[in-house]
Length: 226
Length: 126
Image 1 (cartoon, rainbow over the protein chains, first blue to last red):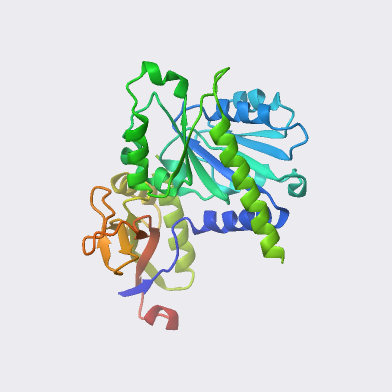
Image 2: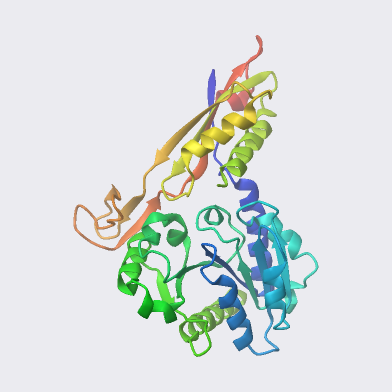
């Protein structure tokens, strides 16, 4: 019997495709964000409000994943940006190959920002690199404050935590400080913003983060060219 | 529940690795799975067993090494295991520590055995 070392990751094939995507995003100056949450945390609503507040000429596109139906794409298409639905047919997460095939007929040079809405699931999407510049995790205030401790992987790997549905804070026993502390126990450098997507609610913290991230990304690209 | 996909990736990798060892068969594949990898080892084992049944890999054993979250202190360079999300350095109490392990999902080794009297190629005896 011989034992041979195997120096590779289990998902090396996914990682290979994801690295190719990341290189293409970099080459064409596309900031890609992978948005992940439990089902019902408000990813699609956050995207609706985001698209609504971006200028019409902004070079933004959305890929939205679900197990079945085109419902989310239909909701998001109303804002006249390119939107494509990825129906996984049962798979509980998006993988890099799905992103690659759904990008095939879009010209990346026409985009500056690609928002990917992952399948609603706090566990499995965290294992699959999609070539994104950052993962964003959404947690609604109707969920438990201890979710970051219960599902550490995705909080560990995300750059930003979006606390959503904050308009409900007066009605639910959710303590923002406890949730934030839990998120930072798992990921000490976690950035945290609060949003309310209802009419009259504020997206401002999220839009400020997004704008800053886009600026940092494009100045990083200019640095790289110099 | 994405362990079925993970098990499939493991088997694909074993099959492709075995092309380098003609005349041998794989006995055991070792994985390292970090506690932050979002993988349920028991579910992975269950999927793995289900997928190898009645295939040429039916006797393949799966060994999973669980890897704890480990940090390194930026002040005193001490490496330590993080318990209960407490990432403070146990030696100097600094909070400036960096994660150096715990999200692994990688192969460790493959054990192969010759089918007949042939010996393994140079790669296999390294």
